Amino acid sequence: MSTSRPIRTCVGCRRTDERSALRRYVRADRGLVLDEACRAPGRGAWVHPDRECWTRALRGGFARSFRAPVNPDAVDRTPFGR
Ligand SMILES: [Zn+2]
Image 1 (cartoon, rainbow, N blue to C red):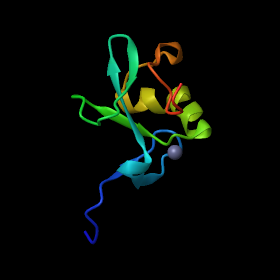
Image 2: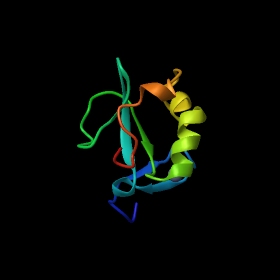
Image 3: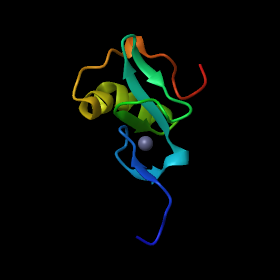
Image 4: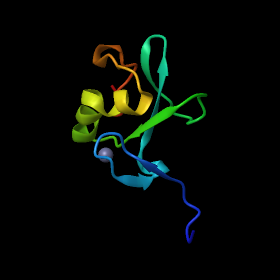
């Protein structure tokens, strides 16, 4: 490896990017939670803070990543701050 920068795959567009360019989400009892510190335990799914990526992630990317259905209405916070 020529780089030590952490690379993750966006569950929306499925492109790889630097970790710092993506937001991490984890599954919780109440749904999806934005993991701002990137330290929550368990499997995380990464997504760009981009409307298109977010929409695609909700339509299947998250479910695929978590291997479980995700309720789009049970999202703690979008990557857009609201
Ligand atoms: Zn993306």
